[in-house]
Length: 409
Image 1 (cartoon, rainbow, N blue to C red):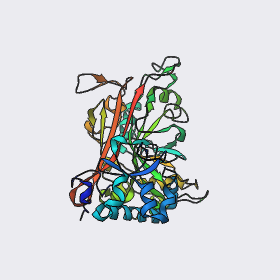
Image 2 (image 1 turned 120 degrees about the horizontal axis):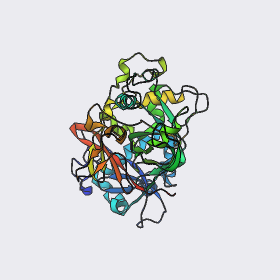
Image 3 (image 1 turned 45 degrees about the horizontal axis):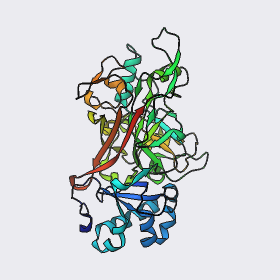
């Protein structure tokens, strides 16, 4: 049965950010002296957890004093569960009103920051629908999926320093690209700028070099999830991707939601991933289902353009983690890995313009009558998502926004 928020909070029972969600953030506000604090969203407010822990949870307060999640992530799954239990108790009982009411900041008054220090960034390619569409676009007449795709999660390493918090403008990148397959490459602003709707996974507990992490230990090491937009310059990427793959076409910007939703909040969203019904290498075997039934929505300039379903993703985040570490690569606190573009089988479920416009040949018509083959300067892309909660409710997974600004050259 779903817990009800305390009456003093004034939350509606169906609020997407009620007690079943409780995502974390880093924020600042003129109402509090500290430059940054760790916060927890409840309804349309942010609870200053840094201050609340000093008052009510002294044994854990040191984890939040830096104003970012780094120390809390490193503390591990027992600390994560303990803090969530205390938050749930505080926000479900009226007797805590006197101790917490002055620590609630209206969301409109909170400036949200990157919630943790990103140690490393890896992007996967785990949607069979997306990978199939890409293969059909670029390799017509051939098998759309490469031979290795169904045997292991594919991915590439990105740039941790290019991960920015939602709301940060994204500058149109420059690079070498060809206007046609026979043309000489020319340097200039990307003409085929795209978004990718993804889900990111945040690593807490670190490992040592040479220590693989089995899929069954996923929840010991991964704290939670956040929405990701892995912006892509398709023309730059196309020219550079032979032979080594994505580089400058990806590393100019990746937008992360300011809200990190704990794995514990997704208990009712867990489903069996399609990969479990195929023959797998032993290290990719799961004893628990870590596919996720999450509904994503994508808007361009506040016009809804797609509803990608995360539940169709072939590889689970536990399998991604197992593959990321099977060669002994170490995890560090603050590592971020993303799912790759979330796409479903239907036209209204595609997670990027590459698919929606079929590589620019069939531009997308927006409700205001404008069309987009690729993103234009001043376009803003917003990605939101919800997931099942207890008793048939829904919970909010967060939001990520980014607006394109002109190239610097």
